[in-house]
Image (cartoon, rainbow, N blue to C red; front, side, top):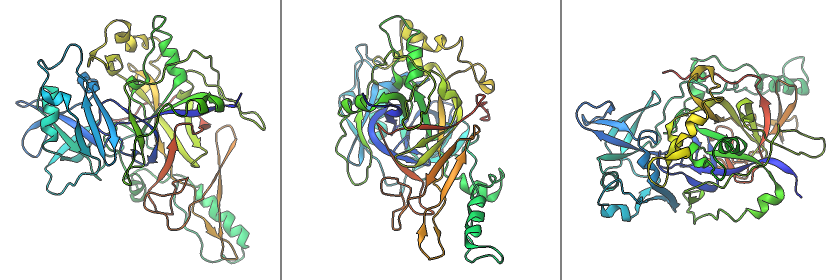
Length: 471
């Protein structure tokens, strides 16, 4: 029997926001989110004044989000080379009757479209604004026919939305000393440099801090990643009648973790075969209509034993996770806020309508004990928002002029040390490279990640975070 560890069991991306998720076996963590995640978004064209945001063309638009447009769940997505392929599932009781011919066809959307000459639209999502590019026809026409009302598809390109709260503190970038300080040995100079790396975060509002935080968000809502736990999902499913489970995709996560043994992972390794990929796509993907079934194993808090690591996972333990380490890539995730749930978890993905019976009352079943965020006191919490932390410090030149790897020990509040080593090699591209994906100094922050990768909880909090996103 293999050792049990907390591992990534599912990865999901949503190339077009609000549609069904796309299950991937491997992808890349980037500062703004998983590769290709929420690069596109749909808007409903409002008649009259409406309550949506205005566009440059004088029209009014409303964000199409799952909670208010449950019919989005009838659209599936799959990556084929450098395109995302969208198909529509016609329910037994059609929402558009008779179903238009477009509902029986597939739409191919380029993942990296040309934006030259595109009209722009102002977008405000969760109070955070940006400018997006209209894709135009045939995309608008196809979605409008499938929805039964006028809709447009927009693309974010390289634009980003500001993070309004819960961004993790960024360490000050140290400047290596080029020569030995008078009266100091080379060893003392290096130690001094390393100490400066672990200095205090830059003040909020400072020019340097703003520069560090400018990566921003795409069309994800409040953070680049949403992480959920299968242990917590099992606890939610246990609130339903026997034989009924809640599907994880209703919580729309990016990263799902669970306790799993090496043996179990090996036996499941072929359950999600990747689709063919092209040079422009590093994500291996397949369309997902449901997540893997939940199990009924018991759980307790994660533990570490000397020499070997045997992990267990309690429901809701993730409420207190502040930082995770991904040993395969040597990167870390900062978990900074709770995710408040809404009526979207009550949707029936087969009908595109609110679910009937117990499946339509999942949100209510969380009411008694999951209103645990004092900053969002009436909301039900499931999952944690996360950010990819910067890579370890750059390598230094030792006295002989050779590169030496620097090591930072990140001490959590319990005094345990977490060691990270910079392994970037010269000549890596903008998006990093190699198994770590860290790239060179100044390169885009990126890390390869795959189902089966181990996750270590390296920092915890004693009290839950409090929601502070401005309303």
